[in-house]
Amino acid sequence: MVYKAIFFSEASRIATVVNDQDIMPEVKKDDKQDKKDDNPVNKDDKPLPNVFFKISINGKEVGKAVIKLYDDVVPKTCANFRSLCTGKKPDQTPLPPSFTYRSTPFHRIIPNFMIQSGDFERQDGTGGVSIYGEKFPDENFEKKHDKVGLVSMANCGAHTNGSQFFITTVEKCEWLDGKHVVFGEIVEGLEVVKKVESKGNKEGRPPKDKIIISACGAV
Image 1: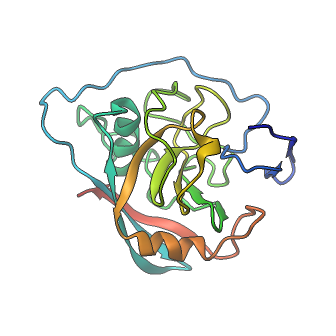
Image 2: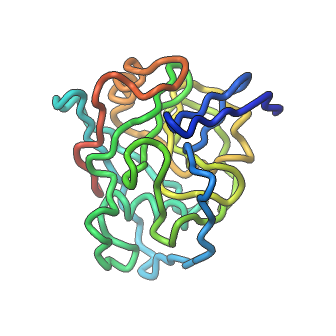
C-alpha cells in the first residue's frame, strides 16, 4: 500500500491521510518508544474473561458492547487491553486510577471504515500508553482485518502500540494487514458500534457529539 502524504497539524493535532486510510494516533514529534517489555502469562491456565464497554452519547447511555479477546493468538496485546478495561494488571495488581478506558472518548470516527478510541492520557488522539511502559512491540499479524467488528491496535508505525484501538465497521480492510495487530472481536452489541459510527465524518475529525466509554470491565 502506498500513502501519498500524511500531514500533521501541531495546532489541531489532527492527521489527514491522503489516498488510502490508515489508523494512527496523532503524535507529537518528540514521542519516543519506551523499550520496557514485560511478558504477562496466564499462570492459572484458566479461560480469561471477555470485556465490555458501555457507551454514552451526549450523556445518554446507548448500549453495551462485549469483546472476545484472542488470548491464544496475541496474549500480551490482550492482557494490555483487558487491564485497561478492568483497572488491574494480569497479576491483579491495581493500575493507577488514570489507567482506564472509562470516560475515554471516541475521538476519530470514519463511517464505512472504523471507530477509534483509547487515548485515556490526552483524550484527543495524541496520547495513550500501555501497561508495559509507553509503547510495546507488535506481537504478530496472524489475524486479518476481514470482517466487521474486529478490534485492532492503532499505532504510529511498527512497534508503537500503546492504548489506542479501533473497531472495524466494514468487512474488508486488507490494507491494514501486517501493520495493525488484531486482538479481538465484538460478540455482542455490534448495533452500538453502528450507532457510534453514524456520528462520524469522512475526514475523521473529532465528532460534534460527546461519545465516551462510560463504563468498562470484565464479563
